[in-house]
Amino acid sequence: MFLKFPCLFLALNMREKILHRATDLFLNLGFKSVTMDDLANEMGISKKTIYSHFENKTKLIEESTMDLFYCISDGIDDIIALKKNPIEELYEIKKFVMLHLKDEKSSPQYQLRKYYPKIFETLKKKEFEVMQECVVDNIRRGMEIGIYRENLNIQFVARIYFSGAVSLGDLDLFPSTMFTKVELEDYYLEYHLRGIVTPKGRKILNAIINSNQE
Image 1 (cartoon, rainbow, N blue to C red):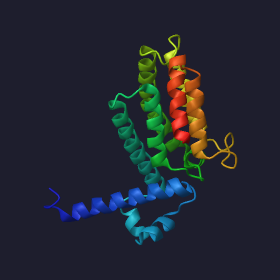
Image 2: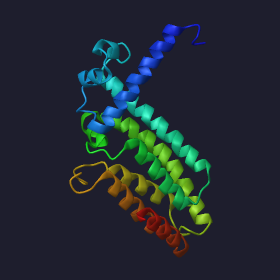
Image 3: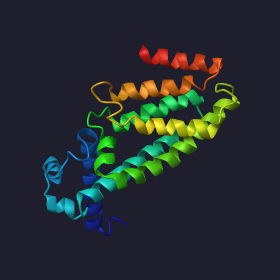
Image 4: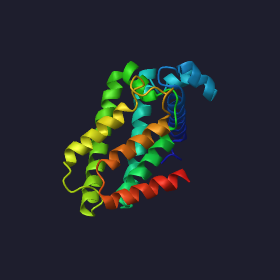
């Protein structure tokens, strides 16, 4: 198909390049900090070229956040499909997400919430849908094999987990001068799991933590 329409292929290719480079800059420097001039200079193209694909910066941010969201969601689905031990599964998901979001110093989530609240709320709703399904399934399987406590209220635990995960991006609560992103994610996942594991699950959790520290 694209061989018949080379101009269309080139246009789509450039659009994807802009989207991916913009996403990388947003994650490293923050949504507010990166200007269209910065992106144009970084790519060696004109702003006119960028605006021919994205009508404004807000639209570019909206599409870059959704593109990253779907990329991460697909990756999480692939990890879940492996049917690993539920505790190990959560650590694999954390590792995968951190690989894509990086140990950013600018806290793009914080900037997104502050300067682009509508995009932030839309993204949060989609993240809730994905995480809710993922965490509920994880808790159920953990309870079935006896590594999570059998008296857990699954919906409560899943929603508390999501609420806490969102709050980690709040620089007022967790300033980057006090915690790195990696530390926060490690502390939070361990905090979550220690509250729901059985003695059997605790052995698995300790083994994973110890292996990660070696």
